[in-house]
Amino acid sequence: MPYYHIWTIGCQMNKADSERIAGYLERIGYEAAPRVEQAEIIVLNSCVVRQSAEDRVRNKLNALSSIKRGKILALTGCMVNSRVDGLRHRFPHVDIFFKPQAFLEFWQFLVERELAPGELKPDLLLPLKPAPSAFVPIIQGCDRFCSYCIVPYRRGRERSRPVEEILCQVRWLVERGAKEVTLLGQNVNAYGHDLPQKPDLAYLLDQLNQVDGLARIRFLTSHPRDMSDRLIEAVARLDKVCEHLSLPLQAGDDDILRAMRRGYTAEQYRELVERIRYAIPGVGLSTDVIVGFPGETERQFERTFDMLCQLRFDTVHAACYSPRPGTIAARKLVDDVSAEEKTRRREKIEELQEGIATEINSQLLNQTVEVLVEGRKKGKWQGRTRTNKLVFFADDGDPLGKLVNIRVEKTSPWALQGSLAHENGG
Image (cartoon, rainbow, N blue to C red):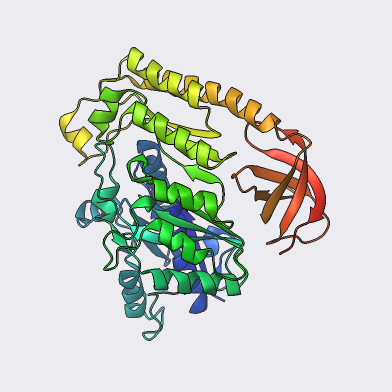
């Protein structure tokens, strides 16, 4: 049995792309390798949204050069653009570079090497055995062009998939064991505007809510500017749509938001959060923040910090700004905040959020929560609540893919621990 190995870094869209590639390789006879050294085909799915991610990809590529010896090494993801000559020069041991979603390029390469049959294209191939929670891309690319973001340059403009195609994929996944789907897009709220009938995300959620056997629906990542009242109402009304939203803030200062080209003010964002919490009581909210954006003063950072104090998110992902070549910010702005200051600001936010998350999660102590069991880690089963809380529990049975009720016995800022109360179906 020939083996493959896929290494993935970055967003959920990358994870979904890797699942597609794995599904195709398994259909043509390959099996996931126990160790990378045993693989005949190695695929790296890259991310360059931040410098730290790009550095990890580069280090991984360099490390693989020592075990290349006859293996096929492929690079995909956001590190690959239309001009790959520089990549070929830097990484001559890589056999093929293909852009995100360019599965046919990879297939044609394998066919030419007589490693894949010519009649089995990877157009719509899916994993043979999907996970209990599956990723479903519904829109590719982004039209927003935030000044710091490389995504529109690497994944292109927004392109929505037809509703029927998405419904077909979700039904296929559910028939094979998936209980939850997460709809993906760089700007998932923009879904449908480029399709003939202009179906929006609220309409798609309504259609998916009617799929038999599907228990939960999530979606990410949302742009605050495109979070409509109609979409908020759909999340509140539809029983399968989980009460969790990812809503990147990025900054709490209006001048920084303007320089980022985010298209909203801090007050507009605050009002949006208030509308969401009014319509969806108990909703879990996560956000992203960039610190050390060009020109960000201490006072401007404090406005972001104060906003996080006031809004009290369930999860905050804080990142230090790093210039991405080709973006508006990299071309027009000076990266003038020191690395040490960026780190200090990030750590200050992380310390704040640890305290907030501790208080929020402690309210679930001795409560019973519904969990979709997604797998095992270090001897315990793990899954998530509808509001996206990570939960660990012990059980001698096999609850994988089931909805179970867990009584929470211990809380922390990052996860909940508990024990099985009784099964809720599945």
